[in-house]
Length: 384
Picture 1 (cartoon, rainbow, N blue to C red):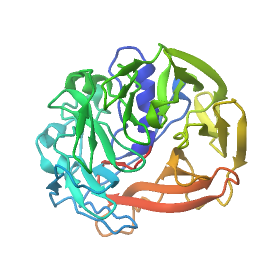
Picture 2 (picture 1 turned 120 degrees about the vertical axis):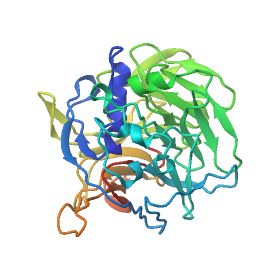
Picture 3 (picture 1 turned 45 degrees about the horizontal axis):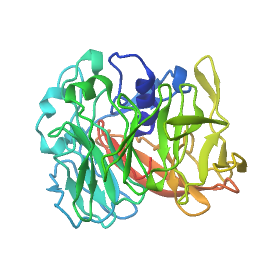
Picture 4 (picture 1 turned 90 degrees about the horizontal axis):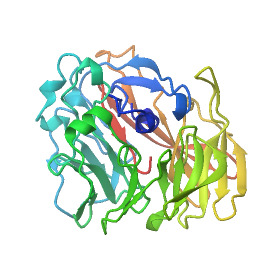
């Protein structure tokens, strides 16, 4: 599912030139079992199949049997989330991935905050070249800016990464060309600045691109982009051991902090937020995150450190996204209630749940639930 995409792709970014997974097998629950330098993911459960119904507090929904309208050239409201679901059919990387080639129902579908549902033919969704050697590379990357106004994706037609403004329809392409073959073999991760102007490419090209000017900043070897501030600065990077640093003027200044889960920078670019408390032994996570930390990037001093409190039922493996308010940050977790039994169709409910956490008190409260019933798929929310 989507929650481990970030970690696995960053592993791929740091590894030698071999076939690597861009995403986890869709339709499986996969948990990163160690830091980026030495990760061992555990396969938890495979999903079953059927018609898909996406539901959120906004009330937007669409079944997989329906084909959404093509995303209009302009005038689109901010995105609430995006997803694809393998057409609601059983997916077997060894046998039938090629049958999804050209299928409209296999395209990325974007759902707006006002409930509009649109497919994005220009955004590569499902890799159809699946064989046992690269079976985990099941889908193309997509990212949504935290304000929901811009979407980043891989344009197969242009063989470049693209950022699209949903309101005015402008599309910017990266200067770098990346072939589909390279995408399937190596995968990548897309990191948008909160304003959607700057695009980070941690793997292979390992750079930050100003999408409006085409200017490219190359990240020094051994470091990879984690977060980008509004206006393109600051740029937070990390190495293979999750040690954090600041990139500026071609150089990296290490920070005295380590974390595999780094949130978006504050609006003024001054505050970095990250999760702490994870413990790893013999490549297995023995204790997961239990603390949220804020850091003043101008002084290097920790501003706050708070243990999680009022933890909701089912909350277990958080990852961190953008700011929900001046004092709250968004966390995301995979849906725990997979509903394997007791249903006439026997289909589990998959999805993501978002929470807000107060950086000063650690108090966690539930925000929204994004669910779908299917064999497999992927769901992206803004700012992760």
